[in-house]
Image (cartoon, rainbow, N blue to C red):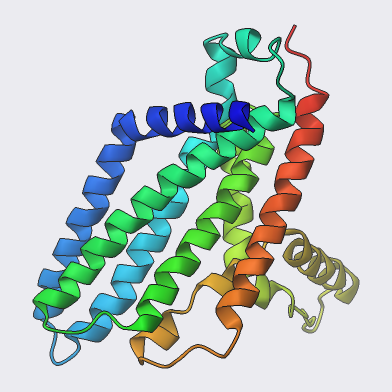
Length: 262
């Protein structure tokens, strides 16, 4: 356990000190401020616009940041050759990966908290309350980030940063529309081959099963109209995300254990 915590702490420190982390957070907070200015110019829709755009910015920037950091996690240690000094020590490879993941999770907790606080401050300036459903929405964004980070670590356990980033972004995009892809049923028009469309429909539905259902974490409509989430929804979505992240980490550990660094 101690080895995992040491790796997690070192990963957290390295990520926090990264200039890209500071730049993305500063840029995102600046955009939130710009959103306040734009929403103030709207006609009686300031609060709704702030909720909609604000949550979109927090979610999108958080996802892209964890994709970038996660895709480079393992590669940096290989490039710097620090992994050759870590793995011979009394530590299992799965402990190394778990420590990396926990470090990124802690870093993303800081990032989401900063942006959530910035968003709350915008509501304070508009003299509006930061409702409980908004707090739930920010929490679900963090759960989404945990899932995406695990997926990024999975791909980085056996691939290059560029390919890991592209694969993670692709799965992220599929996950955002997983609920719609699961219902795809393409119908052929005159002159079209229905068999080809059936294969395409099956492929789309298959992707929706493989990808995490990230549509669970988009509760913007509830926030915009200040509607309470269904009972147990947050717990269910959180459990689903934790289970998918655990599965991705387990697969990452299996692939990483078979990787040859010589």
